[in-house]
Image (cartoon, rainbow, N blue to C red; front, side, top):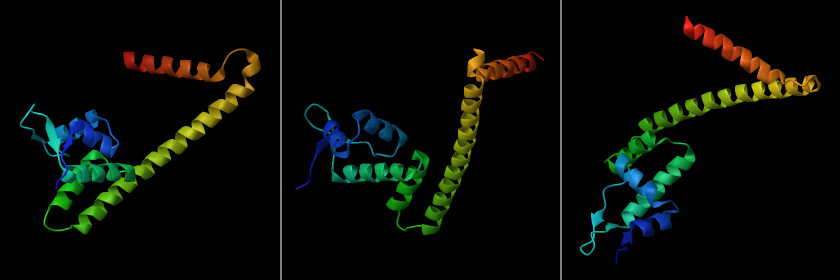
Length: 145
């Protein structure tokens, strides 16, 4: 016997809001559902639940929705293209490395800003606000040119 889910039941089973299911459908990640005879409700089966769980697991691993669409196409195809999946993972890993570098830079800037704020606290004027105001003034001047 196959289980039939409404959109609400499927969402609850997967731990996502119904809006997420509709979004995945629009993006082509989830196949369009069948409709019930009475009331024309969306109905889903076990295959859609498994597909949704695959999508969520891939997202939790760090894959973007575009990557997930590619992985689903590989999964649904006749062969398992390990080399392509490896390339996809390598690209995502490079992106994560770049974001980590960006976060480390932001962390250094914030730590330095906090230190400057604490050093100039007694002056009654925040050194960071002064620096940002001066930088925005310079940027505004360049934009006029």
